[in-house]
Amino acid sequence: MSIVELNNVEKHYQNVHALKQLDLSLNQGEILGLFGHNGAGKTTTIKLILGLIKPSAGQVQVFGEDPAGDNAYHLRRQLGFLQENVSFYQQLTGLEVVSYFAKLKGCDKKQCGELLEQVGLSHAAKRRVKTYSKGMRQRLGLAQALLGEPKLLLLDEPTVGLDPIATQDFYQSIAQLKAQGSTVILCSHMLAGVEKYIDRALILGQGKLLAEGSLKQLRQQTDLPVSLHIHGSNIILPKQLQDKATTQDDGIHLQVSPQQKMATLRQIMMLSEVDNIDLHMPSLDDIYMHYMTDFQQKEHR
Image (cartoon, rainbow, N blue to C red):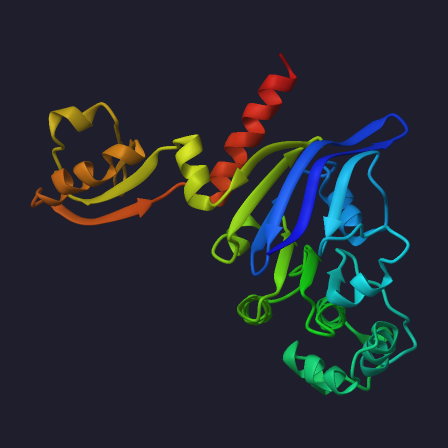
């Protein structure tokens, strides 16, 4: 079932072309990573999906309806949203903040205490928000975003200010929502942190779609090399590998194409001098940098 559909969507702000012919189809239960530099069009895309703005051209549909239409109010009960820099009423307690949003959304207030416990704020539920640290306010934002078990969750830099344990707990919550059929759009600059949680990545550059697909598909498209770090002493590589190798203090560094990976590993494992092999597949960071570098080079020609 398609939850979000963007067809040939454009958005102009006076002289700024924020989005250019963007297509996106997002199915139920998918987690999409939305990536790009500042000004790439990520926030504009989220605002269009939330119905906060209308496209200059093209069509946006959420749950099969126009999110900015006259009858879109009921859609918002199925949405959860966390913006990058959360801000709440300073004089309210954490519990009062979540209860206020629950009332606006028409949710059962019983969820409030449960969500505060889930994000690790039960001990501070009755403290005023002005006493919260940045990380605590981010957790409070997560709690309000999760109200009503949203069917579509949009998160902009959700783990800013969270420690590693809280970050892991957050992604476990997202995995639970996915298992229940929720769809998630996740914006983050910390690509290494989100890599194993997303089903697909969409990379934007100055409003243009640069790449879209699963990590496996993007690796195939970029054909970036696989890196091997070979540990041992007095290693002599087969002649056909020597021109691809660089000797370093702690071993030999070797880059080969993905198609050559298994054959190369078999050759190296036959060498008795080898103690260990570290294998590095192209990461989401590597893929992102590849597309951004290629885009910037084209823009400057």
